[in-house]
Image (tube, rainbow, N blue to C red; front, side, top):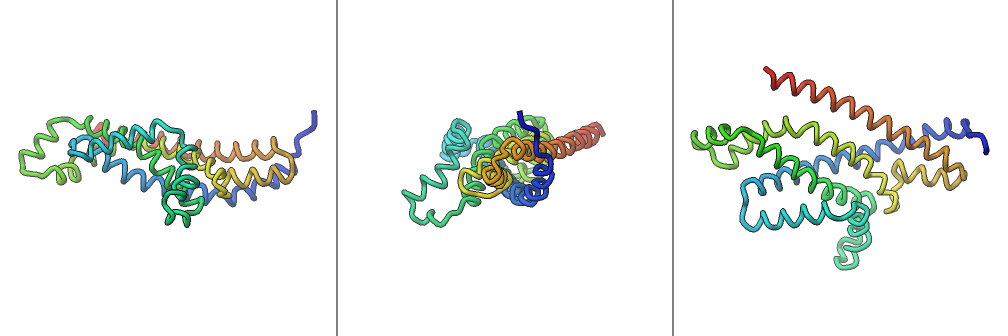
Length: 224
């Protein structure tokens, strides 16, 4: 049994940390886009918009029922073969598209549950003063649902950050991709993957702490 190469591990830390902004950037962009799409789908499901509701159900079922890796390959390798204009899509764009659509399907159901959790009297009061469905959702229902859904959405963002590790299969040199290259060059796979695991762990623990504080603040605000 060989000893760990700690010099290599310490030297690898700053190299891998330089790729963290790309990893977090992909997750952040995907999160914003997924949140917008998920909110729209949740409203469509709640209001039961004709035709759109059926399409939304199909979308959610497909993206929840297939692996993220398959979806990434579909966007990067599959679609360009049937839609020539998509050949210009690079790995980062394909990864963001895959993450956005995959997590939007999950987030839509969480947001829908949060919307339905808003007290029915709020809906009735909004309609009684003449608000349209759009006004009611934007001014009354969605702000209250956001408070309920916020902690869960942070969980999805954490999962999204971990999901970016699959982007290296599309040739993206993000945190996981950089680790794979460093390990392949040094043959010190254990040391390299231990360091990247610790970096992911630190990121997730930071966000988990934020989530706990958010839940506490929202709980206090609701108590008032």
